[in-house]
Image 1: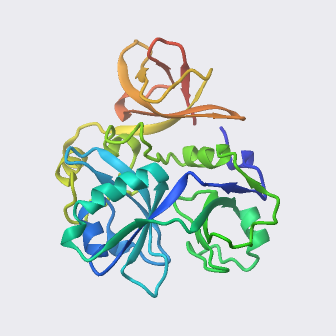
Image 2: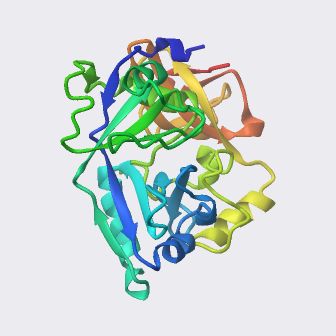
Length: 298
């Protein structure tokens, strides 16, 4: 079983593949409440959450962290995710923006990093780890889903990390941290292909079943309340590195029972997140063609 002890200590990770989509204006919360799967009423300056946007068929277009960056402007929200997907999210929201008083834009004045607690303590010795947001030197530190590596947002030009000599461009530990908590980040190759239940978005509460309507809500809710066996996400370790996204997963009898959602080739091993129905649970699986053995990580 891989653990957070595999993470390198006291090191920042440059997360330049992420970006921030800002929605600001009097109609911001109303627009987002009608489109996002999460409940915007639960988002505050101390409570970042996670959300997604679905299409009319209930398949996920994009996913992101949702944050209210400060208390001064309650009409400003940030959606944080892979840059290309934030541009796609911007296109979706702009279809509805004429009905609301909002401005929607990709920010270009922020840097994003990943940092574990050891690194954070060295830079922010007075950090209160009970807070999900921490503002110092214009920095925001976000914690969610019990991640061991937190997201740090700074203004471009902020020198707090510039002379540290500890900034890495290797995203392996960041992605491994996501794998360990079974958090699937929607990328271009997954957009509009998966339902929330296939990747545990109901378990991680990216989908709030008590909020009002959003695009695709009727289909998502029907699956949630009526399906006899829901698909679930499992972390596996593979015997080799031949697994690929969207590959079929077969049981011991050679029958297709699910698919590979994400793969990670890390220095500690090869990992895959697979989506199968809970009643199909076995210890070992193979991908289509039988080339890769996948063992459920206990």
